[in-house]
Image 1 (cartoon, rainbow, N blue to C red):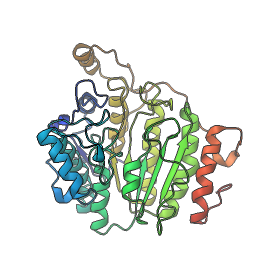
Image 2: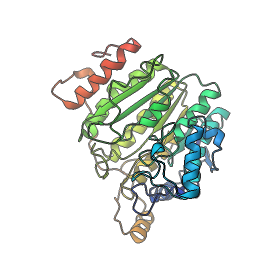
Image 3: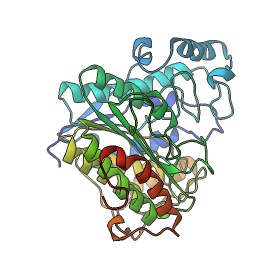
Image 4: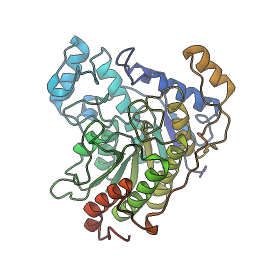
Length: 394
């Protein structure tokens, strides 16, 4: 749908969010994604507005974070002080001098996406540097300091948006975003992730369904290890389209952590880039079907920083700007040479993984001996009746 105006956040200053040289959250993944997008001309289409970034104010951060927490982050930046109470200075989220400015800049990028939708200058918007979904109201965690998606959702709500669906496809549960909106019936948070039994942050079970007065607003699909493309897509389509239709959002905000990939060192879901691209297409379709196209997407996790993240998020960018790339598209030789010479890594020759994408529709039947089906049914039993849907047949 190339006629939809799109906004894309990219600013080299976003590379300053860097914990240390050995940390998995290496900003090279952002630089290589931007370079690959530029090779394909995705930032420069006639319907694409490029957004740069500033530093989000304390007032903006304060829409989703406590004043005490913001002060602790600034103290960590200025004086190097850890704060275990606030999750700062841990192995996952070490303190560094740019921790406040870098995290606040990411928030500004995603908030600018929301502003573009509110102003009508864009219908779709993307900040692939965003997606910091483990940041809770008063605590950092899992490489995340400030929650940019939550701040964007807060702005949408403040400016009169009645309902927002947040869809999180990262391999890890979107715990921070869920916690921030757990008692808010205007926001449905949907997270499809590897089960917390086997993966950080150890949350995101189907019985986490929303607080008092917001029952059914938190949706968790907790998948077993080695789920793979077919099981993951089956689970997505067995739960998410039905609930988006029932909730009737005005905007979809999505988090596209690509650490679900089979090459990712931090998770075990075993997906392909092909399936990750398909999930972005499916979310785009839901936005077109239910929100007149209004859709804000972010990045998230992803630690195969040379071979997976740039391809996955370049596909996401292409979909956002209305110029989706074929999975068979050749990765430009100039980009591959750059990665080889600069980082000594051989990268894939094509934009896909040559996966055979198929999945069995839920309507064909439920297999109680299948671990993915059991996970799906747990979620449907918890949530579907709250929306007048039948967990077995809808």
